[in-house]
Image (cartoon, rainbow, N blue to C red; front, side, top):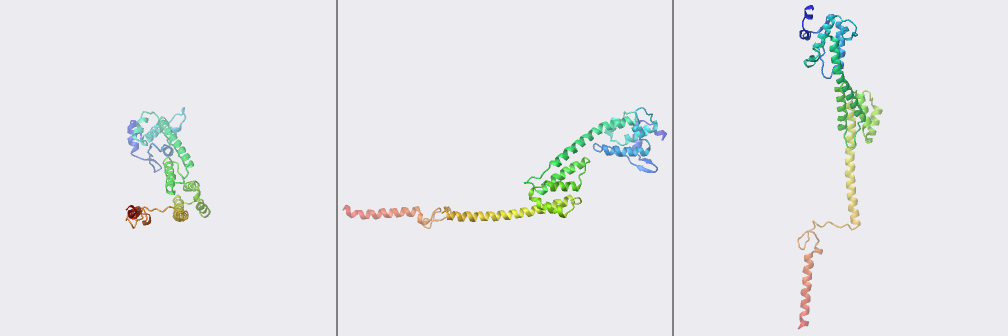
Length: 280
């Protein structure tokens, strides 16, 4: 071990990254820092370094003298638990405490952004309400999308929170099924998928019932209009009526223009015949 302390910082990193921290025969693997896991990474690193007896090098007061060996080992642990691009940031730090504070300053800012984003998503989740034109599937997809987004940021939504949000946000036409669910089911243990399934079944029943009512209403309206039209002497559509006299569409034989014209010609012919003896 004393030989390792005489290596430069990069040699320490290579040696440390190739092994796990050990205390009493228990393997303590390094957690790797990423752009999104600083909070959990810091907790694991603190636990591992305390197990190694080197955490004092990180949380020591400014005027405390840190044992050089502990400081070197703590610095090696930090170098082995960060990716290469982050290593360049802390490679020139002289102590483990300086390296730790540098990482904290960099990633705690990201962590604050993440927390602000979570608060924004929670506000959106709270304001989310199902539109009358939406289906249960569409609205449940919105709830799941926000829940997944928050989960990716470390804020997990439980099934009972999702179920209660779903039941509280649907239109009034679902009140009957919601009342039944609340009366006969345990909302604290009901899976979110089950709540969706129950509401979808009720939604399908409503849709089918609405379709039947619409067809019946349309039929009734047509019958009423036809009867009222006949009662009022509603004009008949003769565009498809064929005249038996001239074989043309659009009128009956008794009102055929050609028949009337022929009748007028016959009358004129008869009148002319009657006038001839008088002229003689």
